[in-house]
Length: 219
Image (cartoon, rainbow, N blue to C red; front, side, top):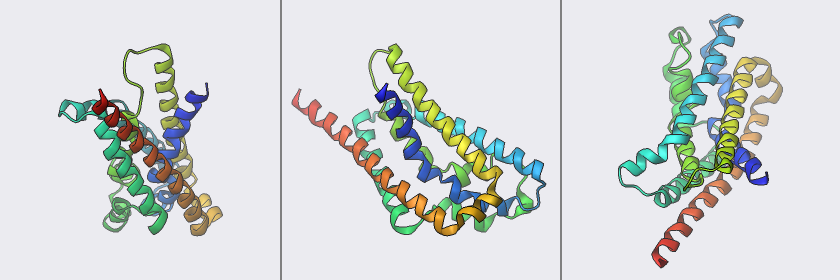
């Protein structure tokens, strides 16, 4: 049971600082300022739905796609762990704004928002960084014969994605009061604390890949 809970927490803790719905809420609010409350709620629900399926596809099938091109899972873990660690360090040292989020904010006018997928879901909420993290986590799942325990771990990971989607919906749906309550300082502190956890997760995933490579050399 402990490992199942850990699988849920791993997915949520790794993706939360990168997806960063708290940091994206003010941008979502500014891009939808011409929308009614009902339209903003519909867009928030659509972003959460789209984001869930994008991340789920990356989590379940990303490592298989890489293996198709001859990249082994241990190598994916090492490279992904380094990437996740670097992203966590960037968020920890520079702040909560990812490059794709800044670009969307600068280039998109509120009048251009007419659907929930582009640019609100991709790349504002779920960008290349989030997809990379989900792919890396997917490569960390157990391999071998599928058992009931394996399916329970996968279910816990999917529940973690569902929690991320729910967080996106709540943050975007209540963007105005949330931004006012937390303020830029509160959002920044929360994101930096989450970024430190992300660094630890990246190192753990990378080390598991290194260990697998060392074990394969010894065989």
